[in-house]
Image 1 (cartoon, helix red, strand yellow):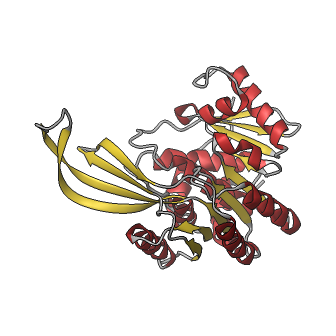
Image 2: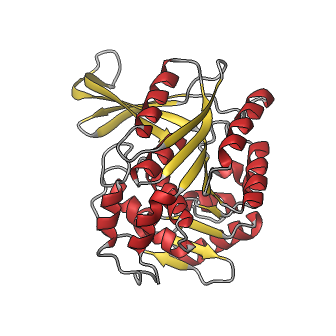
Length: 338
């Protein structure tokens, strides 16, 4: 039986197409030493500023740092943030082992989605979002489909990164599922509750616990009750006709639902948690690479759990390196389930 390390070493042969909402994560770093005399809010004295890839861009980045090849299709505005986002994406493509391809469409009517976080002493003070969340118009949708069609022929797996910023429309989803079916490759979706009806026929869905509960009407959404989580997972699987559902539950691990198999729960490895930002992006990037390498849903989920455990130990939007994942799985017991 192949080891987990064997699958990770085969990541280099994978080429994943990422489709979805591109986000520029903007960080303003500073210190708070006083409260404003104008309003009861902290005054942040800025010391530095940095940018990172979020959303589909972070999935793209994770795939490359994990040793795979990646293509990304999405939409940006015609603004300063778009140029910074392009610069960040292009920087991923020219790293020592990186190989990436961009299939971007520009639209002057939409701003580039940007999340600006102001952070003081490693604590987020406030977040400011710049975005349009309405669905793409027909012209932009057609242009994006052209990019997808051009890039999908190279793909070993497809990731849909849906942050509900307008890119993952119903026509886009239907076209991607049809093309993937003809090409016999998997489609994995990081979903949003309001779009669940659009994901019919995909290979795998990866909702977090709250998304799964809200999408199926199971209450309370914060429950850790295994029977209720089981109900939500099986309901999603039946409604969306997908092969697998992976419900992520933070420090409580992940629950994997497959057709005609018992539910399996994958525990996390205890590690300090500094920031969960972008952990879902790391999970779905790892799943896509593992499935491309021939891993089962279960082994892919185990690897994704390990990768998520690494990334939450880093501050801000981060990625996992191939070497970090290999080191992590050296001590992992595949029997760590219940």
